Amino acid sequence: MENSYECPNKSKDVSLKELRDRLAEFAEVRGWDKYHSPRNLLLALVGEVGELSEIFQWKGEVAKGLPNWTADDKEHLEEELSDVLLYLVRLADVCGLDLGQAALTKIIKNARKYPVVNLKTKSNYN
Image 1 (cartoon, rainbow, N blue to C red):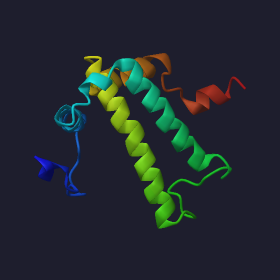
Image 2: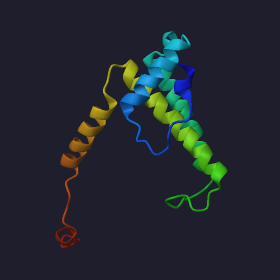
Image 3: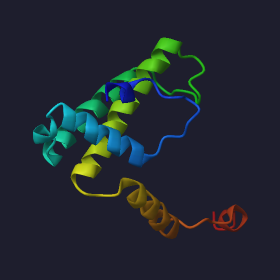
Image 4: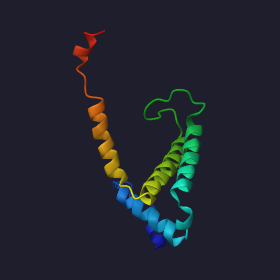
């Protein structure tokens, strides 16, 4: 079972379902389920968002692609982003929600709320 925690093939797309299932197994075999209440997971998620924020706190504006960042800085960012993602996926699972479907539904709602505006037409109103 521990072999399933080896580094994955980086060229493989990872689904939210795979993350959810692996996190559930990871917590179960360690006896952590009793600690994974929605409240506890949310508080852990907030803590990880704080750690993610610290990375950017004093950097000012950062260019897309992080061209001026070192490999170590990028790896640190990957780790903190992963922590946030994993807690979010685990929280959704513990709450019985399909995070992927919820996200797709939210994109559709946002598309209706913020329709595409023809920029030429819009500029006529300025």
